[in-house]
Image 1 (spheres, rainbow, N blue to C red):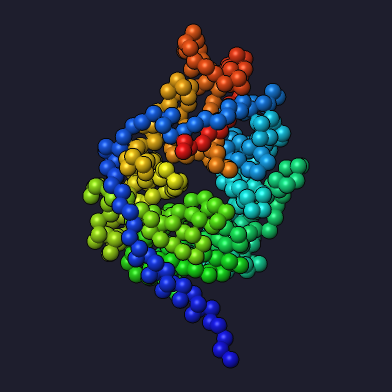
Image 2: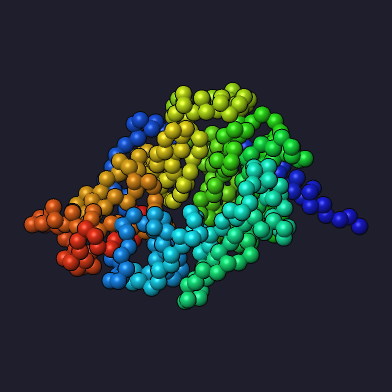
Length: 417
C-alpha cells in the first residue's frame, strides 16, 4: 500500500502554484511626479465623532488606535501607556508598559488578546544564532531567548500576563487565517544546509504546507544585503474571514492576491524607469554591503517594496517604500486615476480633518478609525466661528468645552461606495 509523501505533496503544490503565477496582471501606470490631488470627501464619509471621555486621565493626541471586538485601545508609544476605552470611548483602564521596552502591540483577533513578544536582553544573538533558533521554533530550549506577554480581552480585569512564547513568534511567523500562519525569510545563509529558500511560506502546526517564490539562499541574490537583519520581508495585508490577503515582493512591481492556497498576480504597478530596480541588479544582486549602500544613495527613488496594500471594489490603496522615501497612493478604479494620499485634502465639510495622509487607518467591521488631537479641532472651531458650518451634536458639545489640551477625538469613517 502506498503512503503519502509530505515532501511530494509540497512539491506538487509548488509546481501547481508556479503555473498559477503565469496569470497576467492588470497593468496600472503610475508616475509619482504627476499623481493627482482631490477632495477627501470624494473618498471618505465620516460616520462618527467619538470624544474620549476620561476626566481623570490625560491622553495625548499622538496615539495610535487598535480597534478590537469590544474595546478601542489607544497606544501612547512615547509614554509607553495603553488606554482601554469602551466602543463609546469611555475610559476603562490604563496600563503602564515602560518596563517592557519598545513593545510592538499585536492584536490577535482569533484569540481575542493583545500580545507583545520581546527578545530576552540577557542573550545577545547574531543573525546566525537567530537562523538556527528559528529553524526549530517548537524546541523548548529556545523559549529562553524570548519573552511573551498577553492581555486577555475576554477577561475584564485586563491584566498583563507572562505566557510561554508562541513558537510562531520564535519562527518569525504571523497569523494568516484559521490555523494558518505565514513566514518570510529573505536572508542569505552561506552556512545553511538547505540551499533552497522561499520568499513566502504558509504554515500549519509550525510546519510549511505551502511555499512560494523559491530562491537560492547560498547564491548571490538581490536580497543578500538588502534583507540583512530582517530589514526586508514579505508582509501580508490584513486577511479577511475568507483567508484573502494581498502582498508584494521586494523590488518587484506586482501586487498579489493570496486566497488561502491560491496566489495570483493581480496588478502590475508600472513606474518610470528611475523608480525601477535595474534588471541586472535583480539578477546578480550586490557585490558587498558597501555596494548596496552606495546604490541606495545614488538611486534614492528606486522602489524597495509595495506595502500596506488594501484592495476594495472601488479603490486600491498601497504605499511605495523606496530607497530614501515613503509615499502612499490610492487608485480610483472607476476613474482609472492615481492620487497621492497626502494630496487628498479635507475641507470645511469634514472640518479639515486629514484622514488619508498615510493611506487608510486601522480598520474594523468595514469602518476605519483615526485619532485627532484636540488642538486641531479647537483651532478649526475658533477660526471658523460665525461661519455657517454645521457640526454634529457630539462634536459641537465637545468643542464648546474643549481647549488645546483636552483629550482627543476618535473619528470613525468609511470609504464611499
